[in-house]
Image (cartoon, rainbow, N blue to C red):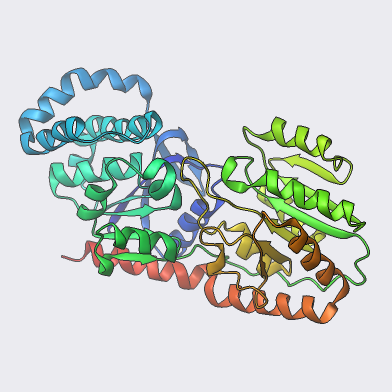
Length: 400
């Protein structure tokens, strides 16, 4: 009988986390026997697999389950309560995420005591990893966990992250940047692995559009501070001031939408920049077909949050869209300046203007960057190869 892996998510499926869906698809294609649990939202079915959601009305059962479990596992509950009084959560949001994970573990302890999966895997270092950590403490069931830039950097990182990574059989990050940070914070190097997501099928690399009298520029990003969209709009303003014809499209939504639309009007680029809002993956593929270049102006937000390597960047590289990125965070793990794209500080719009004009006018340069990007994507962003590495970690964790 195939080992059962209980896969814990915060919300699954989530339309803004396509890479998570690809991960599940690729693992199932390799024969993984997954049971999917979503602690907050999502639900329904995914590719025929039921997604069990956490009914919030069951929270009332904590009133009697928590004391009962405290009697059964006193050491674990002592560690939790001691931590509550000796650690200060970085934010109310992170506190609530961890409490959600603890509540799920409390309510589902008997369920998993009966089901006894071979492995728990937490997709995120917040609520899912808290639940997995507690199941390990309850019944000594092994667990692995994902750990992403959000878990490590926003507000200084997750409240309980060191304890969760310490107990995990393995930690799966999506960038070398996060791996290095976890090791610097005391993590065990041998069990922290940087594994990208990937494409199951590579698109045909579209031909270079020639000539390019009007540059077609695309940004795919949530409208949140770490994406640096305010700085990107100033780049568009500098392009217009330099007399460079262009069309720009920003696909994504978020709390800053009203603010950045207002800024576009103030900068006089509202006719050149279209805000498309959130678009499903099929439409993003169409936007990549349209675009000459993708702009990513990521920054470190005031709360410390930053990007890892957004999956849309290697997707653009595979499709023949030249990526222009800031040097912040992990995008430079894919984009080497002058080899696979361009890396330019977003605070220097004149340099972006010069680089974009060079892209417009120099077919040989454009062709070289496109080929370098495609080569990198084929080598590093193949879902079959990357999922094989993740599946190997599962097998190793399950083996006694």
